Structures are given as structure tokens and as C-alpha cells.
Length: 252
Image 1 (cartoon, helix red, strand yellow):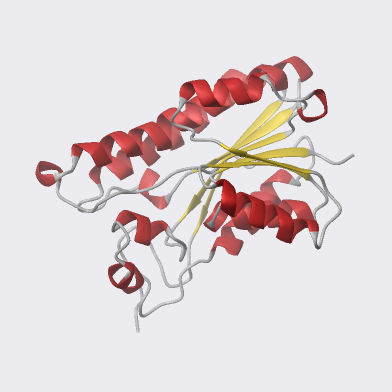
Image 2 (cartoon, rainbow, N blue to C red):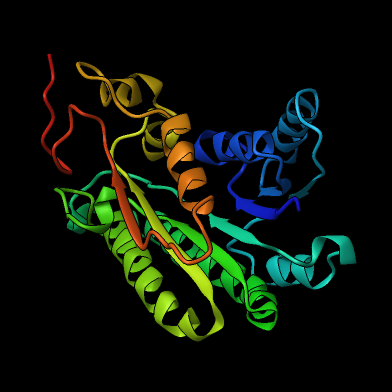
């Protein structure tokens, strides 16, 4: 039976790569992001290679009403969601906390924490009712270690780590899996977004070593989703061979 997989932040990077991996696996997809034009292109590309069903929708996970309106009005054939990948997230800025941009803080908190909570709250009652499902939250090495000038972003990813553990406790009686997939440095749009479109500065983040790519993280997500029913990966940390922790790299 083809599973129904919801992926937030599916218009680029890890979300896009994850969508393609699940489609190749034969799963049907609900792809959500703010950039509907990108979602339509991804849908078209996937359908050229895979015989799956895909629903795309423009959705901002920060908007509580948008989230609940979408999930409350899903057609019947899309309601039995098997897997939720809470991928939407971002970092903005890299400043000491006394110079931080409060607007950036609010966007990170609203996206990385509240967005995850809104979508989870909308999807989980159905999983609880069916006594099956899997929530896969995208964490980060920043959810384990705090680094200079990462303050609020690190705090939001620590929250994702904590919420993943709390969700697993609350959902344990209902046979629902919860996994936290935490990457190290990944060469995606992440740094371009963090540096507000400064591509030169973003590119410097990945110079001198081989970072992860979106497909590597997507492989980990697919892996944890494909294990037997009685096996759950609670937490997985994935990094480049040339990265030891949040700040140490073997750069050539």
C-alpha cells in the first residue's frame, strides 16, 4: 500500500530531495511550501519519473489559520496521513544576541517551533485515531550544541530536539513513531537565506571541505521511515566526515 507522506518546506533543499526519495519509494506526497511555483515544477519533475499521486499547496507554516484550514479540508483520499516530515525551518542572521534583529528572531521562532507545532497538531489526531503514523522532525547539530552568534537559531533547534522527545512520550500509547533527524552542515539554500541573499558569503561556509548535500539527509529520512513497525530511530545525527561537531571542520 502506498503511504501518504506530508513534507513541509518542500520547495527546495532537504524538503525537495526528500520528496523525490519518497516518490521513488512509491509513496504519495502532500508537498507544502510558500513557493507554489517551485512546488509545481517539482511535482512535474517527479511525475515524469514516478507513478505516484502528488498534492501541492501554497502554505506558510507560521500561519495557524492556513495550516488548520488546509488539513481540515483535505479530501478523503488524502486524509490518512502515514508520515509527517516537519522540514520547514530556517536561520536568519549570525549576530551576537545584543545586536540581533528581533524580526529575524520572531520569524525563526514562528517557523522552526510554532510552524512545527501547528502542523503536528493538525495531523496527529488522525494518526492517534488510526493508531499508526510516523513524525519525522528536522533538527540540527545546533539542537545539541550552541555556537557563537547562533543564539536564537540554536534555541529553536534545541526546542525541536526537546519536542521530539516529548512527542514520543505522549504518542507512545498510540503506536506512533517520532524521529529527530539532525544534520550538520548541508550545502543548500540554508546559508543564502541566513545571509539574506549574500551568495558569496554563503558559499564561503562550504569552502575547504565536503559538506553534506540535501540528498544525504533525505537518505537518512527515508531510512528511518522504512524500518519495521517495531523499530524506531529516536534520534539520528548526520554530518560530513570532515565535520566533528558544530564548529570543528577539517578544512583543506
